[in-house]
Length: 208
Image (cartoon, rainbow, N blue to C red; front, side):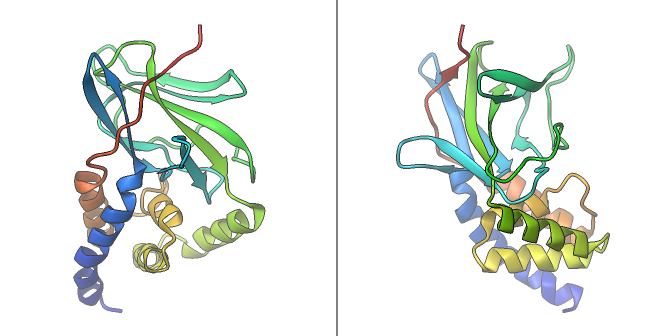
């Protein structure tokens, strides 16, 4: 497929991905106001019981939430495994490479995000699960097969999107180590700018 033909597919497929990625929106309330958090990678969905959950098809998902953050944490069974705090002059922004050993199939962590607009104890919490072993193995093989070829990455993102594989499509699109190209960057910007416009969930304070 030529780059022109592929570019022509970006707008309608970006619109589809934007619709799918609405479920990745999370948030918290403080003082009667809602603070939206848009988690682009790993992609999350709200469960019927209200839990916001992300099932990662890759063992090292990029952490990418839109906006500025005062703190981002990864926890497991009440233990703090990793955290990063904003510096004195600038908030945390942009994609972050996975900071822990590879996520294992079925492993459960909590991803907790505190935007700069809220108090020290209020975090948006996403339950992060490693995908089943077969899914994770397939995803790793697929990513490895793409090498450093931007067109191969773009074709794969679009194909996975068309198949309804939103989680893998977003993780590949925002992969911290993925290549760059005008078409890939255009799709990244489109999703970043327009995804996640509405969903909120209640605050989740840290335990004492």
